Length: 257
Image (cartoon, rainbow, N blue to C red; front, top):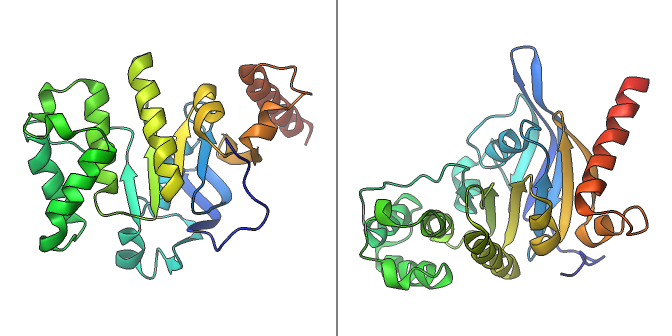
């Protein structure tokens, strides 16, 4: 896993000052981040830290109360159609129609993403190949294992060859073998796309992410390459200890203010 190179092209995703409130509570408060082609960014945090809300804003599912988002140079608020064409999104609960066959569902997803009719067959074949679904195309989605259903969810997110892929807790609920396969798939996707994924699992950051941003109480409190994060504390700390130390130091600073 390589560190992000010092000289980078224009970001494929850029967010500035994102804030989202629910009543008097700020679920996300002033979040800014960037993502570049060929990069896998891990958004790490405890449950309730604001990860899912952030990803929903980045994909246009939720409107921020303040802040600005650009996807491949398109302002998401001003040019939503063009911006969303560049995004593939897998929510925490995959948007699957469990009574459909895999091929029919992916063809339907391709139409929703406005893939030209004459290119749907090619797009379908490529998505099945990349996600390891060649042998299950005629199977009903609801009969598949959870790991394969997650693969179908990722396939619908990449069916239109987006430049940016956003994955919310992509391995949640999977067994170790299924998680390993999905992690390998995400790492492969990162070679050709920009990938941002939320997780509370330290192993995912260590195994597949180039960079990591840690969220806590709606704030980004730490950002660095995953390699440098693993060297936090002179490399003498376990990943879980690194995470907890960063959280505890931030909490102590909050109390001191």
